[in-house]
Length: 319
Image (cartoon, helix red, strand yellow):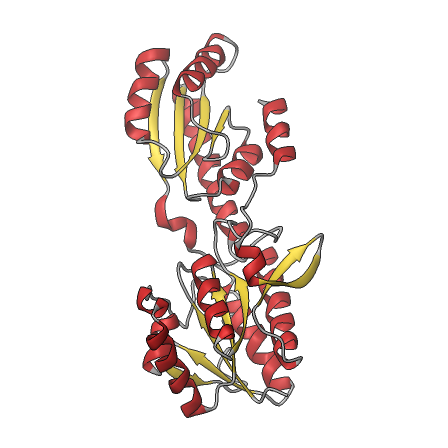
């Protein structure tokens, strides 16, 4: 059985990462397994930034956002020689296996290490919910609630001034944050990379809204689709709606993790260690229909995250 496990967080931070670190640590210690935290992600793995954890190391972190192990981008890890050097660092302290918390880039590193003989298990820590084959990722629910809170506040001022508000949220290739937040807040329009962007459709929809009994409007849009400030100017000119654009930015990544994210992270942390105890690697934790399961990383990375069509249809119905 594995005697020593390392844990790291990689890529963008996400609320709930600390809860996962705590769960992995406690599960290891309760099974007589040594556990090391790795500072600064794969860079720290390469540089030997290891902290041996004991029963006190992860106290009082379950409710704290971000990652107390810190994170850093380290594209050099793609180089096989760099990975070999990281493995040598792990051998110095006896780390035999690794839990990696992060997104698809982090998963790629975990898969490469497994192929080199170091069993790794991935935990999906990303606010975007952009990992295929899992219902939700750690951090998504907290970020979603942050957006909903912002939209509720923006609705108050939009209603008072009879404005149209355009809110840009994170998500890159996955529009789940925009989709779920838009449904939760009754947005007039939701624009994501999956739904596509048709400016004329946006304008016509808002014209119809203004001509009806709605005197304010909310549009939620995923980042990197268009310049929302320029869009706001064009919407105002075309519709007569006084229009303001807001970019929520990195505050979506912060804050105390929600109960749902704490539970999800904790359950995935426990199961990750159990898989390593069974001698398994190259797997990632996924929530599928309420159950926590381990799926092959290679298989998951080969899939494309699909928008939830049923939720989008509900949005259109309620618009």
